[in-house]
Length: 466
Image (tube, rainbow, N blue to C red; front, side):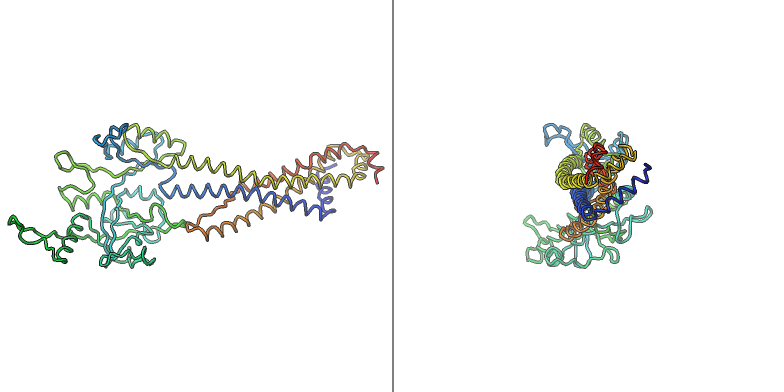
């Protein structure tokens, strides 16, 4: 018997008993949808967690910071190993390192109208800023030949307060202050110590505690002058992420080389706040960085590179431990959820077996006639296995479509409930294909024993059956 004839006979036999076939297929639909949706929940949780880790420092990034030389006992008397250009070049030469990005942080005050904010200005190379793959709502990465410009985080406006009343507008009234990062001039004060001293001095005068005048020693005290304000243009505003917030939401970035030039211009030969001093109190001639980000080729090398940096005497932190713990938990969750879904498919397999056994009992005479006509046992087995595979294929396909619909509904509900807007169900193409193949395989396995039963029927006894 030709293969096409077997296909034709298998499909026609299924449609002869439509109600039974539909009910059996429905069991496969529910079973397939259950196992796919359950696994998709585990995958979605893993994916959402990885996205969250990525938003808080990256999956393959090691953050290098200062550590005491004698790190074994954390002695406070130990001299710190500084982060400088020499270390940056040394880190670039390590195996499996893709890029090294130093950060220079300094505290500044941003002022616009009646609003101001005390923020950490982070200097970073323009190449490093581009490698962050930031999405911008306005503007973009500063040009290389441009003066010092600022890149603002999407939620930075929330940190501005009314300088006259001291009220944090957003946190107290849930209304963003009227701060325009791109359209209005932004005044930046770099000497924050002088600013607060002058402001406190002014407040003392206002309350009658005037610090100007003649002291008990006969010396005249001079009022602290307000430091100079610099107008710095905005280069861009980062797009607010779908999750609401990430590590860049309250950040302010700029070109690290331009920042160095600006600080050198302001402080000249004086110590720059945040920079270490020699034992004699004088500043170093070189710059020391606040931290250095080291990007690794793959997660597989994270542990080795991180340990190498620690052995060099520096503090090295990454999300490797968090990632490994998350992956282990995710695997466990996926196994549990997949096992729950597999129970439904197991019940569907029993239904397929029952349907095929009933089909054999009802078609006993037909099987006997086919055998008498010379049809091989292999053809009879193939015909019944095809019928079972048809049930698995149809049920699996409909189940996959149903799974996508259920997944979309779950994500729609959880996205509206979750302020971060993360999807908790994720069905990748390989899972859909695997679910379809699995349902077909379950169908064929369920039809195997009924097929053997059909093969073993005696032709003469089958023909005599009424």
